[in-house]
Image (cartoon, rainbow, N blue to C red; front, side, top):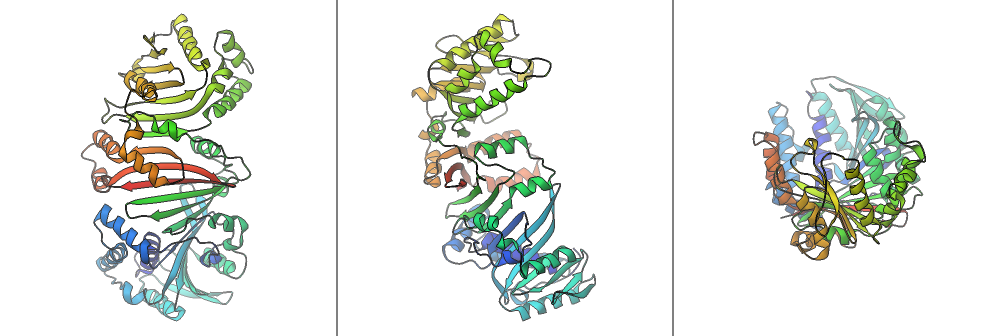
Length: 517
């Protein structure tokens, strides 16, 4: 915007507070006392780094981007940008003397893909100096401001964006418009986000030692988006035992000397979280996979899906309550098949478009699944479905070739204890062979072992090898893509990604670890 950097201070606080703060849980947050009640998104972090957290943050910045001091780097860039605009800005003189320990931001409404009703709150150690800073910004602005008062609080309104800025209690408040500013003032004098039980319960679960904590009211965001939620996202939440219409969540960013962790916690909203641990299946997937993911309790979820499909039927093809019955008469017991499934995993292999492949691997109990797969293959061949071929040798199953599938077949193979459904014969059979100790598995990979260790007591459910994934991306993305070329400078420093989840009482928890080389 073309005014003296009033919002360069806004950016300075946001950029400096959140990436280089000294963190910690925001339980009992004074900053949130200026956030309007019901705000669906709230972010808070500490402004002045110290101790181990500062050294870890600087170590990661140095490792990834060659930056020795991230806070100094951000300030330097802000001042250089202001200088280029012909509006010099001295952070050390104009902001640092009054800058307090914590800062935050609230977002009131989701409009499509953008937020509105935004406010930034910055703790001040010297409100007189903060007011002088505001006066200097207003006086030097190319766009006029006017002074106003609300509930005893004086503020400035104007600039190119008609923003409102003022000192509220011990905080600098910059708001997107007069309405939002007044709501924050009202919150500071009584009913605020900090006073809500749902917020207090959620934010109290934030991780210690975090750079920043982000509070999200998932249900409210869904309401604001017209009740729409991506079906995949809804399924992921429900698989974790979370009712998205009532859930709240907190994400915390926690740095280490050679990794960055993003730790999530979400209220289960009275739902029962799934139990089980699929880490043994994940570790038994083929060792040449650059990515793998596994979940427990797949059979139960599939049974529920089959029951729902049978009840509703398939319009124009299968009447309600006839799907399971009709297939059973053909020798395919869907209920028995689903009940025999235990865990599910998926993996991907390859370093180019031509070598790309992978499979879904299901662990089973008994021989029901193997027999059913064989019967499905026989049925498809008996009705002369084009491109269907039976697998030979010691595996039950079949393959399907078609122009739509490309140069590799879809393969369905079964062996006692496992079913694999994959793209390409080799990766599909590898999903079966690894379990039998006839191939190298992910658990034989050192990066995978380090990923498991990084998650601690949280069972691993997902893994990606940084180098393998980057090699594939490098082969698929044109060399002329300048954005990817720039991103590669940072992506090549990623050794692995690890994802794990668990439950703690009535909270579902998850960790995403980015391990660095």
